[in-house]
Image 1 (spheres, rainbow, N blue to C red):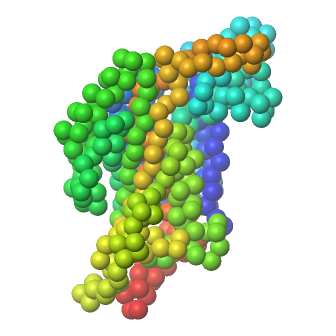
Image 2 (image 1 turned 45 degrees about the horizontal axis):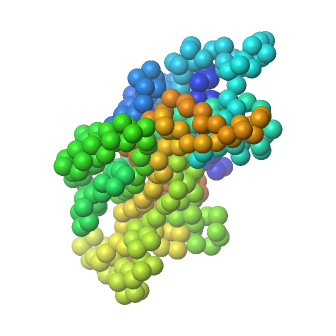
Image 3 (image 1 turned 135 degrees about the horizontal axis):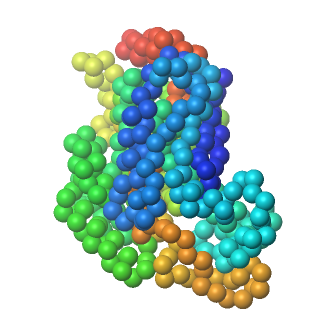
Length: 391
């Protein structure tokens, strides 16, 4: 069985829900650790008032018994505290739809799914689109990713992230982004940037944008250590791990670009400066690269080096100084609707990035090693590591 999940819920609905199928039995899941991941997502300089309302906590409804997975579908939910303020508008089984006509959203916001979503599903009220298209949905992805991180940690695979730019403020070139020392500093930073001086410059950039009614995007980097070579596949396009990882990151709201390793820079350089020379480490009994320009992936398969993947997030489309748009009904020009929003969510997005990467890595592990229980998985995984040492 493959690993998959479905999710449901709206931004201001009663709750967000997910059902995970195919997860191994016998994995200890500590809800507090998952809640810590949710808390990390809610932090970050530039977040809006919604984060002052919500205190996200996961509730496991099935699939666990005494904090241990049973191999059955894992269902979980995150309640939206703000639903109490939106109950009349978002009532799933309400009777007074006519009374909501004066609260309908008719002016699509540039940069959102508002207009194409309304056209696709024939909605006259754009709220039917924006409620699901909202980045509030990423809270659920972090919860699902938190479950995956519990397994990956047991296999000694670690995932971390840090912000590399916000607006026009960038981490200096030449910094060692593979150093594990950066991540503690990133977690302590309000912008998830490990450089304290750059953090302050990023905060100033966000403050200026907020005063101007603007929003800011940026870039972040996810790094995974402890991956063995051989996850993913080169034999068919939809099994290539780099393609799956890029697709997962691109599916996060606001992400407009993904690169792995040297990424776009490699297109500007000769091959001798791009490809990583191979040597054999007799002490560790393993093949190594003298550099990691490939970012830990070659031909859609992990090569044993750290996975390095970056994503670019566009500025949040909701502006307090809104852009022009056109009414769905009258076709007249208006200022776009304004929903409560953040000035910058790049720090939070880096945490979401960790979670979707964790999910894709667990899918790759399930594909390669299969098994139904953690005990079986661990035996297969250790046997594979021993095989690698032998060859």
